[in-house]
Amino acid sequence: MRGPGSIGGLSLVLLFSAPAVANDADLWVLFSNTRFGTIAEIPQGLFKAQQPPANGDGRTFRSKDGAEVRIFGNYNTEETFGAYKQWLWDLLPRERIRVSYKTSGEHWQARSDLKNANSPPVVTGGNWLAYSGYQGSNIVYRKQIEGCDALHTVSAVYPRALRAKYDPVVARIAGALRCKVPLDCRKGQSDCTYLVPEYNDGVVWPD
Image: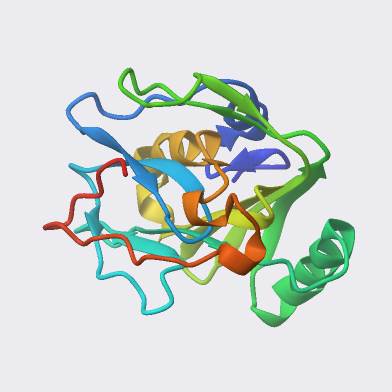
């Protein structure tokens, strides 16, 4: 994170405008959360999925060398996205996060490089925000988009010493963040139920 507009050494222009490339040896798979409809992509060979939380809001993925990625959804408890964004910006200093860059917009774009993904290669939506910074010896990053009646988040923490390895990985994960209306909610919120995604030996497959 040298100067504004970077995650580690990675340009935010690159992050939000072009797909990032990770190690071709890592098998990327689709993660789809049933409760909120959050969709992202994760390199199966690099991260191991942890047991899902009881509330079924998403999943945590950890690597062997200390990186952690969380992909999850939640409802916006503020009246507007703008109010939520201000609440989050105010929270960062209390979390002792030294922010080096933060940005937001009214039109997000997600790009998928998966050939077998059951969705268009480019998807667009509404409000979004992102920030990066330092917390102790770690790089922290967060991207959130608004859509499908919820907020959808990619959150990453990894050691500064490994930023050359994880900057492009996190860029691809965040760049593919998108959503779909949960199947159980399409008839109306009163009919909405959630199912905890099945845990299958650390691999999250498309649902």
